[in-house]
Image 1 (cartoon, helix red, strand yellow):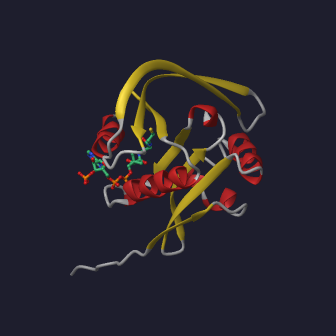
Image 2: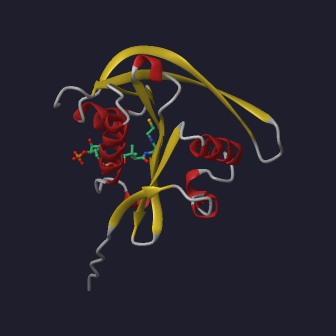
Length: 167
Ligand SMILES: CC(C)(COP(=O)(O)OP(=O)(O)OC[C@H]1O[C@@H](n2cnc3c(N)ncnc32)[C@H](O)[C@@H]1OP(=O)(O)O)[C@@H](O)C(=O)NCCC(=O)NCCS
């Protein structure tokens, strides 16, 4: 006996209540980042997208419209889809929506970083027209649940896509 389930996927803006429902996405472990990012969202520096499957927040993508705006670059980061709903097109849909938002903010280049060992994500980005432009050591930090700062260093490819071309 089999059961088919239809999922209605929509992309919407992050709401404060998502801090509870996005626990699978690290909303507890990375609470300080979620809270800081939400403050930046309120200043329109960041867009926080959530993919909703039926009523369940199943994926995230944040867009930084501000950090490199002088160079006409928008940054995509924090892309993740809950493991059980991967390989169904949700990640691609989030990126497509993110790229449209960058274009509507008159940004000409989309940029992201991907860990060198994340071949699945890199393959997805290449299929969407991103190219590696350099490698770097990416450094970021967050306050853990005990309030202790954790420093993270990651070996990444930096990738870009030109938004003025139809790729
Ligand atoms: C990367 C990630 C966001 C992709 O989300 P997703 O919803 O699974 O992606 P999609 O279903 O849109 O898949 C698009 C493409 O991803 C690649 N991909 C997805 N699942 C894959 C798998 N199991 N094996 C290899 N490639 C895969 C393929 O290129 C696929 O295209 P295709 O299925 O048309 O061939 C998701 O795997 C994830 O959350 N991974 C953990 C967090 C992460 O690595 N984030 C990226 C940080 S840079």
